[in-house]
Image (cartoon, rainbow over all chains, first blue to last red; front, side, top):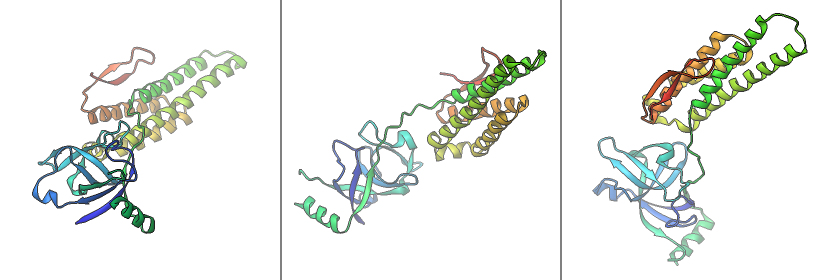
Length: 99
Length: 166
């Protein structure tokens, strides 16, 4: 139900830096659907385990777009929509060295 | 403090990495390069045929011109194949392939026709290459929800090409 991951990469800079830790869980999505702006971990068939921000969510198709905050982010602008089934969870806790 | 603790644990037994994947995709894709390359193949075959039909001595000028036509035909057939491979491999995603299930077969056909264009002077095969790449262009623009039209290219060999309606 709870997973700890370490971030690798820069696509969510400046908020999330490479080397930060995040605690991720699916529990919030038992109570509400994914919302734009939420940061999630998910599995992409080509890119593996990814962390991105939700851009939009379509409850009919259960597909969502995900975005990075860095201009060079590889995200839905590059690989299209993802299925909500691929979500590992929402970031509940961001553990940062300077906080 | 929590960060330091997790960092220490990570040194001993690394946590799984969650990738904030980033690179620099230019995002610029357009099948027109492949379409023009395929037209060039037809044009080179036409120039080779014209030169051959002139008759006369097969001197060094003839060999020079014919060699140049062959070289350009080779290069452009390969360029057409390479451009299609990039769009197919990098731009088209699973949802596009679901929408256009014939794409894989069409790309394979383009690869075969491109090779034939290099190996032979078969104009009919070169025309088939142009048409197959036109069909791929329709898929590409369809994937971007941009309508297309067909129009005669305003230069020899004046064949029909698919263009986006922007």
